[in-house]
Image (cartoon, rainbow, N blue to C red; front, side, top):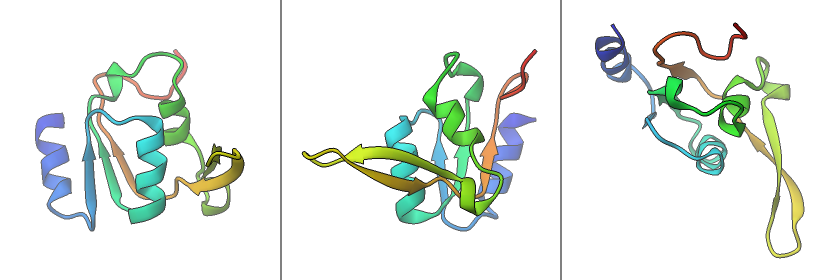
Length: 98
């Protein structure tokens, strides 16, 4: 089902961003810049625990869907939005404690 669901939904998404392998920094910078519909495949391959999983799970409301990272040579803190529609494809459970 995963092989057909993701491409089917991708064709109907606005500004889709397929991401089978993405770093945490690339994820929040892409969301901040583009506000895509994020299509993450192979989520079951994420190591436990991972910043990436935390960022994807963060924020069920726009006001709480942020990560804070330091930027620049002076390491100033900055908020990055992680608010966007997300489709997460995985074999088995994702983000649920067993």
